[in-house]
Length: 188
Image 1 (cartoon, rainbow, N blue to C red):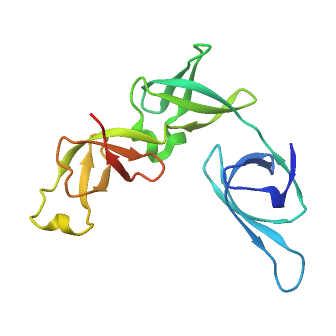
Image 2: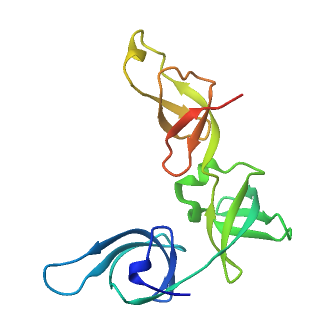
Image 3: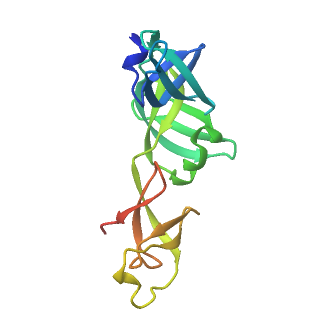
């Protein structure tokens, strides 16, 4: 699908230089002299490389539509993560590095969305939030709850995050997979 650089929005996938890129940020720039342009930050879908590109406002670009399919996470064999398509039961393996540091949130049996381009997997989308258990948290200091403060805590997935003072060891918490931040106490 053809679009112009003015139509670019964060989250879109484009084909540029024969590679797939996700638009991270766009900024319309109108210099004092010369034509306006779009300053665009792109992230490579397959390898995660970043690219800052300048497009003329009316420059034609190719927007790519990806198919989304639900896959169940099966297991990790060290280098590869194995998933099974929920509709066709076809199994695929993706490099562990394709998930980056979010790999810690994968749990056996978890259903994730995998983005496919022409039948080839290009990206794994985890649920926006996951429930984790706090395995280490500092005790509350009396009077500390009066001000909006946070304390460090370690989760069962090995990640360290900041949590409110009332969270204790053994508490289940909801964590954002986007920025690894505390969202709320999990409902039991």
